[in-house]
Length: 198
Length: 198
Image (cartoon, rainbow over all chains, first blue to last red; front, side, top):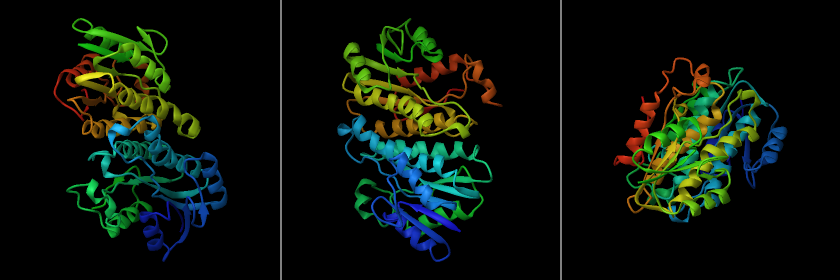
């Protein structure tokens, strides 16, 4: 299977690309390194990405830039970081990528437990996650040719200890559990689902 | 109580403004008519709106422009209608409005049942709704001075029969039930809640 991993140089994306490359052809996409560079906040860059990728079987996105910071410092400008990044960036990966994906292919986007379980400083990510989760449910009923779409929605992950202080009382998700969440989406039958790895 | 109704010339907003004006001071805000005109897709227009309103006790938003149309016609451009309108428009009403709202005031935004119960043609509204619902949960834990925030999330409403064909099997929400949903948010104690009128 030819799998495109967008965000492949981040903590999640690198782990998943390494895990899946034993069995599959992996195209690593990063903002400044990887097999192909792309800026998901730019529609032109996304169009250019898929022209280079050509046809593919699955796209995994772990690319979710958003604003982390105190509510009091939040203005339209900060809020747009997540809107242009985690939200529109991922939506455009689907809207453009659907023209290149093979029949029965799949899109798996990254959301997060903040959707329903908010923490201080993360209102921007929460909103982007909520949008992505609703988007995959809605897109699943309109995508054709057996193409599936799901989101994986973890809480803080094991390999990002710098975020632990922001998530008091949350049991970090192991990288293995995260991988299983993505495996379920990419290789399983489900569509329109929000998969919460535990 | 001084209540600002944004979207006051639409079906929901007009009903709510008429219902609440028997007991409260209502400022009707519309895009082209009303007591004050504002374009919620423009940050300058929102800033200007609140300068005219001054201090207030509650803001109700029923202003949710989004793109309705077949998935196949959806590109970045169409998707931005809901992102700039129902999502960023309402987020900016809160981010700016919090500087003007009185202590113990409330914001009530409009979301919709499409968040969890999608229909064809409505992926854009679904994503905006999901974002708004997650946003109110996150904002509620950071707003200070007893300021509350909730969303009302109806399915198709009784007074918009033109949308009935798009919502097969959905029992339309009566305008009275919708009003009660907003009453619960504005006059009740809850915050960070998504209220689903039935």
